[in-house]
Image (cartoon, rainbow, N blue to C red; front, top):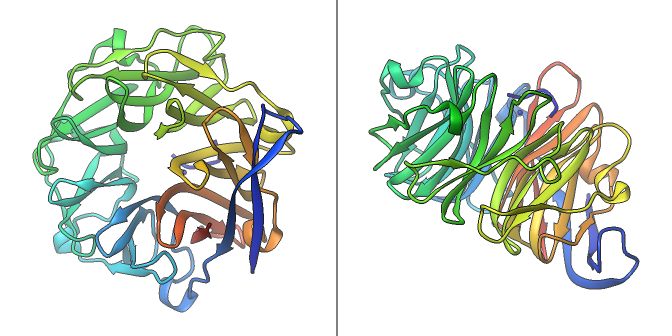
Length: 373
């Protein structure tokens, strides 16, 4: 995926009889627009936003920032955004926050600073935040990049040293790490990228380093504490694939990511048996790198967001299996340098996507898109 580790156009979205089929049926009309963010308020090099969730004042987004604010932003409606002021006493060292979920005392955000130590922030309302004190033995040389509510309370995933890792908490405050097992969590740069409540209880996705190149990987758990790795099937999880995100929807679960330089989608009814949506170059390929970075239930059924070369991109599906691509509009999805959508949620006017805009290659700015339908 591209380096991270991160005007109105009306579009009629169609459900295809199969990938690349000419049989169309109008399922929803989404009007996407780019939110105008005041540089005087947010500053240059103010982002990116990496995750967004509904709740609190309306919406809460987290990410990285070099501005004089915490890496948290709130909005009542997806259009008007406010950066959370940075308080070093309450928040500790200003880290990058990779993911946020409603849970614990209200909200829990996880991530890691540039020093490479997992961090947790909590908030009762999305506006007032505190840094959670974590034991060194579960945070050193580690990064939490995905978090969800359920099971013991909160489940976070990421990497610790050179392997995938899981942490759990009953309340967002007290945390423990699931004991490592090479046969389950792998080694040599294996990592989990996202986790959701679904399937047998929880499903996490990421990448597995094997004897050959990396391949997409899935783990499941009934309770967030006991985990199993879904057996590697070369037909479903071929080399040079990566799952970046997973959500409930479609036949049960839908995961999105990359296959080489193209976008890719996988589906499962139970989190254990997976199928890859057949590749269609017109839908999932193109010039440059195509990435699906986030997916959520919404719109016609499912909406995935990411990037198409240097532009933001959106894909939609009724059922998680037949997909269509939202036509590119330069005013909404393009611009100078790079634009990327990293996360999407149902909220605001209908859907809200967040990411980055790198207008001058000197630093990422936060970026927000909204869709009404």
